[in-house]
Amino acid sequence: MISFVNKLIPLTWKIQIQLFLLRNKPFESLSLKTRKEDKKYIFVFLAADYGNLGDVAITYAQHKFLSKSFPDHVITEIPISKTIKGIACVEKIIKPSDIVTTVGGGNMGDLYKSIEYYRQLVIKCFKDNKIIAFPQTVDFKNTYEGKKALTKAVNVYSKHPDLTLIAREHKSYDYFNNHFTKNKTLLTPDIVLSLNQTLPKFERKGALICLRNDKEKKLTKKQEDSIFKYLSNEFKTIKKRDTHVGGMKLPLKNRVTKLKHIWDDFKKAELVVTDRLHGMIFCYITGTPALVFLNNNHKIKSSYFWINSAPHIRLIEDVELKNIKQAITEIRDTEAVIDINLIETKYNKITKTVKA
Image (cartoon, rainbow, N blue to C red; front, top):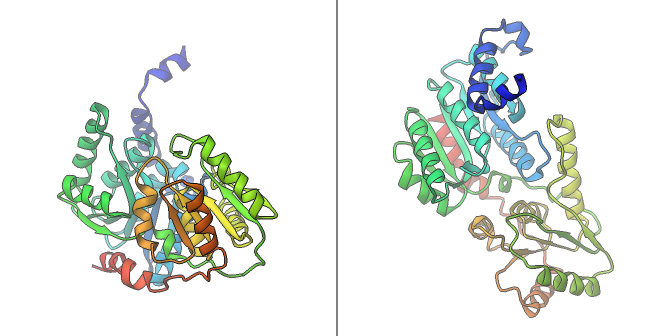
């Protein structure tokens, strides 16, 4: 009977009840370290502690960017699995001069409802603090439910007096400007592109395939088989790897270890074939030659805009074998060029916004 009643209670109600109970717990019982009174804080909410290495890389890059840009601040991550407890804890120690950030990515919209709800909860709970939503792709579907979710998001976001929304590609930037008119908006690349992971270098052998197997996949089975057959004739070894490794509530050390393992795997490959956004980005930051294929939304094509001058990354829009052969010939032994000016020329907008 209890379990039946529990199912009838909306998730949002359960979260509000949980937050109420946590807010009324003694400070010590929340297991939070006492803040350093002589330091300013930047809190990173929705930090990825699950097995999507693209999201883990975003959290890692965001933390590293903030630490480098603001060495006088303490950067504190709140894992997404501990969002409710994190809000209750931070509310007890935060000062008006502290900054709240939410992790970037592709989860702003009506597809990942729980993450969007958590983001809105953070925005509602810290109205006295500057909040910066790091580079995002936004996607509210043009359906009744999607429009309803958008209206709610606009209502919540618009009520915050100092919220900055950062888009990681032009389509999302235009969307922010058209719908979230009361909030500040910026356009920068995905924060993972601020990393340089070219070292240490390894001897490169064989090809690595990092392709999706979900609803975002655009390549057909026939196309994929044709690509695999050609690669098998061109390279001595073929290895398959995915940016999804599974797991939830992963410890920080475990997350970073898995992240560095996949970067090393990329650096050991002569060529990576991928249709994942962060597969492409990992190739860029590790200096790995890559053939990139489109997925079924705009994320890859829009994000490729930032790195389209990189000689070692090639976007294949027309999946013909002759195009694939030509691209491999052109990039296989190409020396990677990492744009070390990206931080200064693109991400300095974020730094200025935090300091403002």
